Length: 231
Ligand SMILES: *Cc1c(COP(=O)(O)O)cnc(C)c1O
Image (cartoon, rainbow, N blue to C red; front, side, top):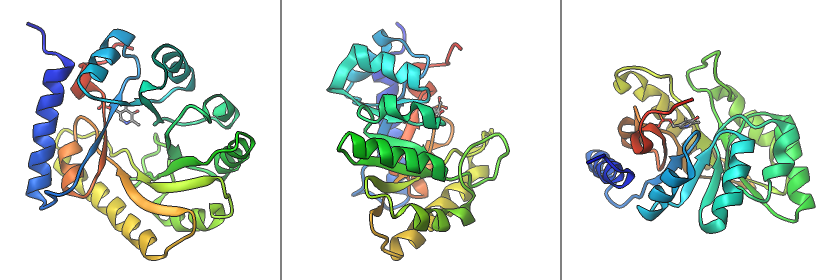
């Protein structure tokens, strides 16, 4: 018999619990974002039936397509690079934008949120490892950025997000997760208006256990749930 999304989820939940225990966070919860990029509706429904209700997409067009079919029984999370000119298509559809990484995007999000009379929840994407191929602010840019965007009343910053470099052994990127957690604690101590540090979105299929050990409370899992992607 084929391995199902439900089977995969069971295993992931066991691993989450082990990582929480290992780090003494037994009272904490970890949110699982089911990353459904390239995944078909049938498999997404399988995930929903298994109890997952937070869907992560990295492309606006694909997110909208799925939103139109699946509707509002799940939450939609924008986890990929977001072009400023596409904000208007998703502003009223997404629960959380994980990829706020520049002022021009913050300005557009605020403007569109205001227009739709809503607050938009965001995470600031941090390129902790300073990889050239990845988006995100450098660690030392985050506090100045927060000070700059705190004037935008319709943007609520809920935390930070990072994508660690892909490595065989996730121990090699433990420092990335630790640095992001330290940064979030530093920001929390400053008590900025409109800025909360409740969410640390870090950890993917290859490295979520290490990320949780370092304080993650939101992981983004694609391959681990749905198998290898066919692009
Ligand atoms: C694709 C993607 C993921 C999921 O990656 P897997 O290794 O398949 O779990 C997580 N976060 C982001 C931003 C992604 O683009």
